[in-house]
Length: 169
Image (tube, rainbow, N blue to C red; front, side, top):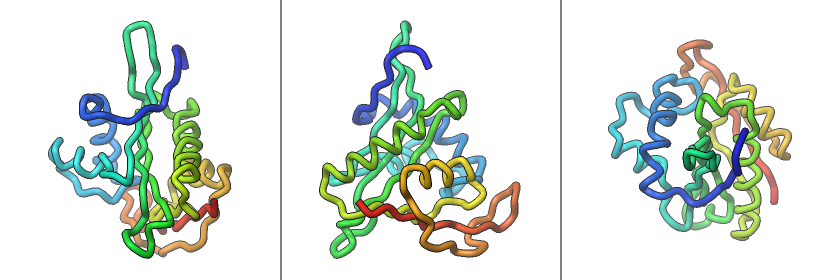
């Protein structure tokens, strides 16, 4: 990657850069259980977390300006008595995959949850055939604590399991 890589809070002005790869990931139906045909407004509402959560972007500050390479949303996994456990979701632009963007966002999210005083992070639905994500989360210390069999209908692999992954902070 060229330029300076920065992770910063996402703003409404970032949505036009996020939306194309958000739409591509959702339409592929391989990693997210979001419905097809989301409008721009619906997608933005799903992706931008309200406080106490946050949404960030990883940008490459190239000569021509900032290029959004990936994004993450994070916050409490559940309200009330479950709010001490965080969760997060990630999307990386296709052209940036395999270049460390997911790892940088993952490390940022773990640090953010620690700084906010969360006791753990739980990913509720990591598609078991998404081996790059499963491997990344394991390398950051997450464990698969259970798998819901055939809970995700992949167009490529058929019905596959969804891992619940956990990291104690």
